[in-house]
Image: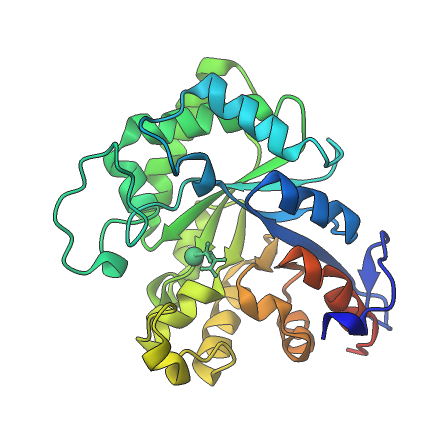
Length: 287
Ligand code: PEP
Ligand code: MG
């Protein structure tokens, strides 16, 4: 179906009645960044930074992180917005150099922001390297697996301290909405967030009670289930004019685009290969 997009457009896509949509890319390495540029992504809607930590014996330091981020993002113009996600570790993605305690239900356990708040040094190192990167390019910072407003309050405290310490401005700090609780109570989380991005992969997994990696329950893992659209509507209503986007697999489903735009989502972040295809889908829509 990628063949449907006839050409790569480097212009922003707009619906037939003129609503502009940001079609951005999800990346996790330099090769993805190159593909995002080639396929005309308007920005990076989700940079998954986990790869910077895998296959190592130790935690990368602030300077090393900054250097790797700069290298990975080198193909992307510095004025193009890049959304850096803080480490989404835990669950099934464990780091050998950290002492993980016994986890009985990894996906329900200490992952994402829960994990970061338990290892504040790791969080601070990431925040500082992201802030230093923001001195030379346009960035936004995204917090994974936010469930409670206190998750954001706690991260913001570390964020403000790091920014003060470095005497730098604070780029937008946003929440990933990927649990049903966060979606249903997005209004409270939104108060502590500069933008919201819905991760529909995890949101689908937790809403449908079906693991995203388990083929035996694949029939229950339904991105376009009415319950998911219900939750997306809750998020859109709660956002109160703050920027909202979708960065899970649902954003790359052409037949879902119209419904997402009608709800008020302004950014769709997809696999780099899907960018032209989703831009085309946007351009065919009359709202
Ligand atoms: C998601 O959960 O939808 C998402 C975009 O994040 P990840 O796939 O990295 O968990
Ligand atoms: Mg996720």
